[in-house]
Length: 197
Image (cartoon, helix red, strand yellow):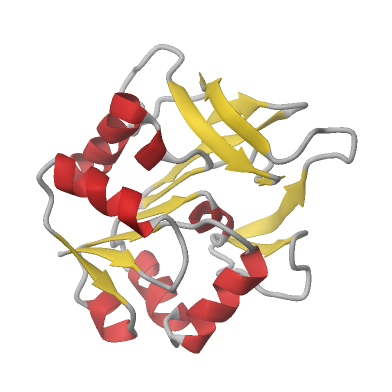
C-alpha cells in the first residue's frame, strides 16, 4: 500500500492527482498504524519546517516514520519532506528533524531573492534512479531553504550556489522541487519511484 502522509498541510491534492494519473492506488494516512501498513511512503511538504515537525509529533508518527525508513520501506520526501530527513533547519532551529541524516537545512543568503520560485534544470552528480538518465530535466521549485550538497546528493540545482535537488540513498529518496507540479517530467519521476522501489 502506498501511503501519503497527511499531516494537515502539504500539497496533497496535486500529489494525489499525479498518482491517479499514473494509475497508482494509495491511501492518505494520519497515524502510526497507517504508516506501519505501508509498502511505500510519500511525505509531501509545503510551508514551515517547525509547523510540519510539530504536526508529525501531534499525530504521534515520528517514531513510526523513522522505524519504517530504518527497516527499508521506500520513502519519498518532497520539498519539506526532504528537509525533514535532516537533524534541523535554520527555519526553526529549536525543532528537531527526523535525523536520518546529519546536518542542517539552510536559508539562502540574504542577497538572494527568496523564495526561489520557478522552473530550473537539474545537474546529475551521480547515477540517479529517479531521473533515469534524463538530460537536464526541467522542474518546478518553490522554496527559501535548501539542503547543502551531502554524500547522498544525486543531483543539484544552482541558485546562488549548488544545492541538493535530488537525494538518493538505499530506500530513501528526496526532491527539493515539486514533481507534482513539474508536468510530464515530474510525473515520470514519481512513476520511477513507484516502479523502482
